[in-house]
Image 1: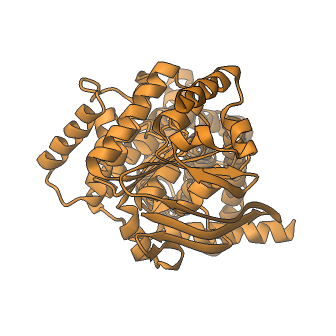
Image 2: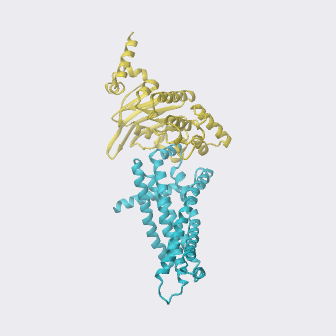
Image 3: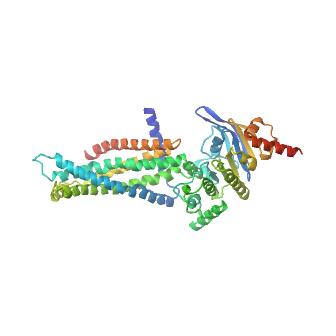
Length: 248
Length: 256
């Protein structure tokens, strides 16, 4: 088990080394970068919007239901909702969700290219296939993730705001006051930095599993599942490390 | 000319190729034939550098592939075109995009020149009008032709085709064979075709390398196949009744 894990890690490092070389044609790289930005980044906005609005609303309801002590002010609802969103939801949980969408998409796309010999075709032409296929994906997803994170923060807090208007369980003014109280700007940066690491994990690990698929459609599906599971575990692991290092 | 000398290749202790030596000549359609599991694909993948043989030499006009560094290999690969069994077209690109791909990556041509060359190749394989179609929108035979157009876009010196007729109806197979022969002769390419299609063997085999259980069992051309007394070759090529009758007829005609 340990030997196998070390071997996989070694292969991953060699794969990354291959990926991170200078592209053969920058023009082609930028063309693919823009394509991936659209596919992996902009196409994820609807999912992020839906998840964020609902989770923001649910967080606000939960805070209202659970903060029952008369010693705590009502604005604590907005404040705690904001802290949950900024510290964990907008980075870790969002990236776990994106690992499912983006990770499986990358692994199955590259895996299918492998089993249909498209990667062999690139190699025979003399193209560094890992660099050509994977580097634009990693670059696009890592560079776009801050946008998704900030968008997630805004829409989640807006979800809480909407639930205040719809249900009237907390006054909107108190909610907004809570959002502004004891705000620590560093938490926004903390979420963005964490998400950059998670985005790298999702895109590179999924590409790795897709790139080394052997077999047919069944194996592509298996690789896609393994990519999502491994990315999720690594995200959770790195979340612990980042929280310890950056918040303590 | 491509020459292989004493190539051996094993996987997990099982030897697939046993010290195979052969020559693939310029301007001819060179066929690698043999039963399934005889080592054809391993030999072809070794020739193009997708497998590294355990021993031996692969000489491209005297240049040993196995002794080349990465940049030399990269240069050599610009001289190679390959047609894969499943065509291996890029799903995200149109027909035109697929044919233009090697030009964009490896030529110094302007966009207009690339376009002109791509259109020439598409016309050469009789696919005019299919430029904007995606691989999933065209038939298997058309996909093969697009793959041929992509393979010849950079004017390769060496063209490799892995089972070009697989999955095609007999008529389309013949069209693909004829196209490969025409292109080979027209541009003086060294074409290496991996096949177990007997129509191809007897129709376009200008130089045939027959593998049996990883060993080189016979070499010759399509005419010599009829006269060969190699039992394994005869069992393989004339396996069905129709081909047996053809052989009988050809031999009778030759005797007369």
